[in-house]
Image (cartoon, rainbow, N blue to C red; front, side, top):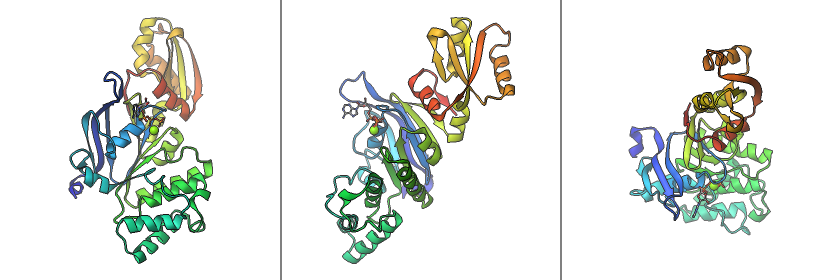
Length: 320
Ligand SMILES: Nc1ncnc2c1ncn2[C@@H]1O[C@H](COP(=O)(O)OP(=O)(O)OP(=O)(O)O)[C@@H](O)[C@H]1O
Ligand SMILES: [Mg+2]
């Protein structure tokens, strides 16, 4: 494999895409790098461009410009090799739901070229691995949402050898907390076995729990990228809200803020909330004690982090 030489399994640069109207870009220069056996989360709100990015990487659609390689292969010029190297969830959602989980997996295994005996063994193995042995003989239409997602993942694995790259587009949306946790474990197991996982999610907590690195996508741009720890230390914990005395002071500081409220000249800056840090920040931001009128400290949730990054100012791209 051409990937033997480098350990970047997914690499995209400058991806752009617009549907129809050229001015309205759905992706506006998206770049990504995902290491082998890593779990990378593409986090973003509805319409951010997550599915579009995944579809480009999975060769289901093409970008207007930019390049991408998956498992070392170009997604445009080496489309067939890319397809062989990946698994995409949702792919098998159309499977006949009157079939049982076992029948579904055996059928897929046969389609991928295994003998009857091999297919039986492979189905058994996957049903056990995905916690579906007890439900193996039940029609898939009786499965819960979590069981369906697991069957879907298993179906993506039936062919051998196992694909090295998984694209999971919002794998846990609509699942209850317990099913969500079960699926997280399945995803971790995949990565532990050496698979590379790119998952999209709208939930910061999910990205935090699963991912080695997170790219935050908003309106077709990566607005922040880093480890969960780095992202959290930048934006979670607490927020120091400053009411500035002038518009100049406000604009001068806007770039480092995670919360902006121009009408009240208020900016929110991340802090750990300790007196030492707040004092240091105030001195650094306003050495002459002229710009900051008032301040307050709030505890920020992980969702605040996400909201701050994705719904407010776009000019400051944060690399953490
Ligand atoms: N085939 C299409 N034709 C026209 N517009 C599209 C098409 N597919 C996606 N879009 C638009 O592109 C934008 C990004 O869509 P995309 O599905 O990539 O977002 P997303 O981040 O996956 O959102 P969600 O969280 O809702 O799944 C949206 O504004 C969407 O309406
Ligand atoms: Mg989507």
